[in-house]
Every structure is written in structure tokens, then in C-alpha cells.
Length: 350
Ligand code: SF4
Picture 1 (cartoon, helix red, strand yellow):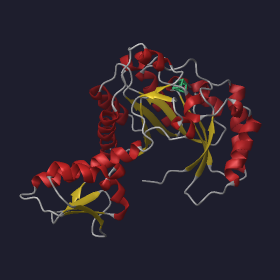
Picture 2: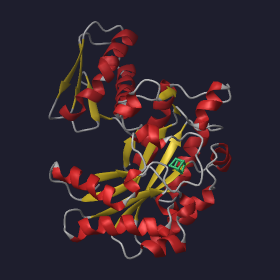
Picture 3: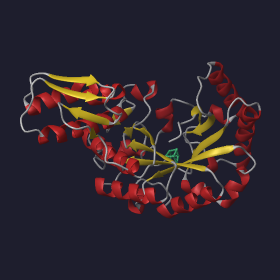
Picture 4: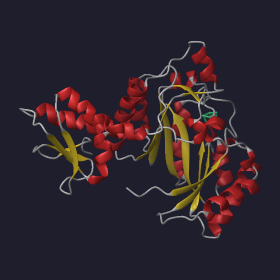
């Protein structure tokens, strides 16, 4: 798998959106205003970011996030892309990416950006279930997503897909089915976001009126773990799980309810390691005590769990008085060895 590019983010909260989807409040998530829609303001923001210095990475992209990029007026799109192209021409970044709704990916919008060095388009797929999309007031269907994939692929763009867990009228089964339908479209990478109730979103009103109940953090972590395993088995990189923690998001009152956690992705990986350890322990004839679990040094935090929760849980469940997680060069990443057992892969093989 190639390594992810460094992105220079330009947040354009809800710019170009035809309406507000029920779960969305990009102003709360990003803390940004709409000032960066002006190319000179966006240029200044990019210059500030680049002035901090970039450590070596395979590539660097300017990324227009937080809105519906191809839903902007064409002059606005061209103004921003012209500005970003200057950085590419100066060899200061390698290319451009943006996020947009599937229904904005059309022949005319793609013709409008053809001359610019856009490399990657991220589609806000959210779900492949039309009833779930309608309940979330997305204003597009899964057919728009299929069509967008076809058009983007025919023009050679890298395609990312964002999907959500816990949307109104959704269920674990429907979300997993959505993931399977998305896998059939072969995105180059995905991001998985839990649905949380953000202040000033339509969902916040539904929650207050008792019309929407978010999924629990534990339930969402388990569901996202299953999604992660599904994408991984199909060799589709998952580049993000959970909302990016920001000062604005962590501010009291921004997330009203729902499965928000600043280390959501870590919780998912930790649960996968806990599952694998339990599988090993339940196969042991007698329980060694003290017990040693060996993992690759990179995986120590995942095996220990958030605030050592995995260790605590294993000790309680299996009545172990002392459990040690140790790093071993003999153990590959994403594997573990419980006591003297064989090495066990944490995830099912490809
Ligand atoms: S989810 Fe996307 S399309 Fe919907 S309001 Fe938010 S930024 Fe706009």
C-alpha cells in the first residue's frame, strides 16, 4: 500500500451544499468560517501551513474539505483551483484533492476542472442504502454514487469514499451491506465516521424531540471494527476512523450525544487485538498466571487498550492476577502470541 500524502487542508464549511444534511454542522467540526472561499485568503492559509515546514512524505496535496466542492459556482471553483495550481507549478505541492457530493460529479463539472492538477476526489457516500440516505436528507441516491465512480474512474482520478455508521434508519446489517456495495465499486481508500449529534444540526432537534437515538460508543466501535475488517480483507485502505479531534469539537456542548471519542480509531484497533487475545485464551487448556502476551513493539498500545482497558478486561474475565504485554521482534505487526501459543493474526487473512 502506498503511504498517504500529507494534506494541506483548506476548510470550506458547507460551501456549495444545496442544504444541510441532518447530521452535519461543518462549522462546529472544523471551527472554520467561510473566509477561505476567497482565493487570496485560502492562499494565505496554505502559505502559513507550508511555512511550518514539511517533513518528507511521498506527496503533498492541497485539500479542499468540509463542503461540496463541485457544488460551488464554476467561477469560485476555478478561482480556488487556479490559486492551488500556482503551488503545484512552483513544485511546492504535488496536486489537489477535494471532497464533494456524489450527485455533483457530472460530465459538466468534471469538464470544468479538467485542466487543473486534481489528483484525488473524496465522495461523501455516507450510505449505499437509499432509505437511509433519504432519512438523512442527503438529497441523492446510491445510483448517484455508482455514476460518480464511473465518471471519476474514466477520467483517472483517485477516488476516496466517506461512509457513516449510525445514521437515522440505519442498522448494523444495513451498514455492512452498504460497505459491501461500496467495496464492489473499488474505492482507493475509505474514511469511516460515526454519526454524532452536533449542536445546531437538524439531528440535534430530532434528538431533543426523541426522534433519533444515537448508537452507543461501544456498539459503534464494534460495528466500525467489522467495517474495517471487511475493507481490509478486500485490500481497501481505511485512512480514518472517527472524527478528527479538534479544539472546537472537544469544546463542551459541541457534541451533544453519540459515539464521539478523540481516540476512536485506537478503540477500534484495541478491540480487534482484544478479540484475538480472547480467541487464544479460550483455546488454552489451563490459564498461565502470570500471563505474557507478545506483540510487535508498534502494537503495544493497541494490545494494552485505551488506558490499559484490555489488560484490565482480560485479567477480570480470565481471573489472571498478573498480565504483561511485551514487545517482541519475533512477532510481526498485527499478530500476537499468547503465552507459548503459535503466532495468531489479529485480522483474517486477505
Ligand atoms: S454532509 Fe456534506 S453535503 Fe451535507 S451539509 Fe455537510 S458538507 Fe454539505
